[in-house]
Amino acid sequence: MAEKPKVAMYWCASCGGCEESVVDLAEDILFVVENVDIIFWPVAMDFKRSDVEKFADGEILVSMINGAIRSSEQYEMAQLLRKKSKIMIAYGACSHMGGIPSLANEFRKELIQNYVYSEAPTVSNPDETRPQPILKENGREVELPVLWETVRALDQVVDVDYYIPGCPPTPKILKNALVTLLSGNLPPKGTVLSPDVALCDECPRKDTKPTDLQFKEFKRPHLVEIDPELCFLAQGLICMGPATRSGCEALCIGGNMPCSGCFGPTSRVRDHGAKFLSSIASSVDAKTEPEIDEILNGIPDPVGTFYRYGLAKSTLHRRLNL
Ligand code: SF4
Ligand code: SF4
Image 1 (cartoon, rainbow, N blue to C red):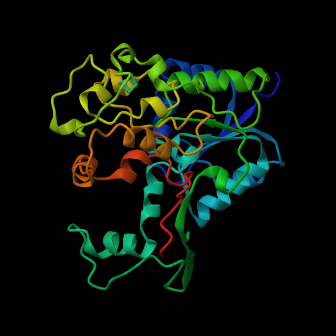
Image 2 (cartoon, rainbow, N blue to C red):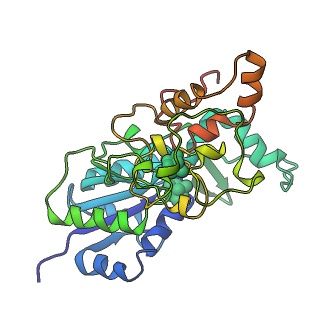
């Protein structure tokens, strides 16, 4: 029997949701098991780095990496899998664009570590212990990964062939991507494996989207009762649908929550957040500066709103005054 193509899956700065999305394939997981040989998936199977090191360069057909890159170990694993794989896929928003972990680029690493290891209300750390790259204890030495100052998307550290978007990708997007890859009929390098049109195109509320938007205030989803039929923008709620790639089957919209942009921009948009922000800003219905300020105060966290998934890949990338 012919050998099945080898597939590796790995997680970096990730919440685990992308790993779960593979399990969400439900019975379609049988399609995966029938057609490929999973040779590395540390979250589910007991493989080691040394198992990957034994493969010849390019012997693995596809490596799918989820999570952003923010430590020396993640960088080394991304490099190793790149070397051993024909096709490298950035799987999920964190790998594709930096994702939620890249919001850490708003802060210095030291500030984050101070909070996590000292200031958080649930932490007791009287000795102010911090992680060290080398730990020596009882005559033994352990080397730990070094946390980077800046969080990066996968293609900011290794060459990436394709992107599977989403936070996490839907089972349909994953299955379609696998079918495409196994067919051998590969799309151009750099393709995001999801339709290249805005989410509004597949949104069940698109007929209620105002043609002439005028915001007198911005509302927050948890503070208002949301009409389940009407376009969110018509209700004064930020919905990233006009600037975001479709393919998610409008799942959040179906759950009566606005799109927060996890599929990233279409290919015609260079900076996802800036594109959406500029369209919103031109629709603020105010004449004076205080009026404008008051309306914009309805968006208390602009970076977290417009760059929730893509700060690492944005023009801003990170705060510069380190
Ligand atoms: S893309 Fe979303 S689900 Fe996947 S690791 Fe990042 S935060 Fe988790
Ligand atoms: S803005 Fe949001 S709710 Fe309105 S049509 Fe687009 S995706 Fe749907």
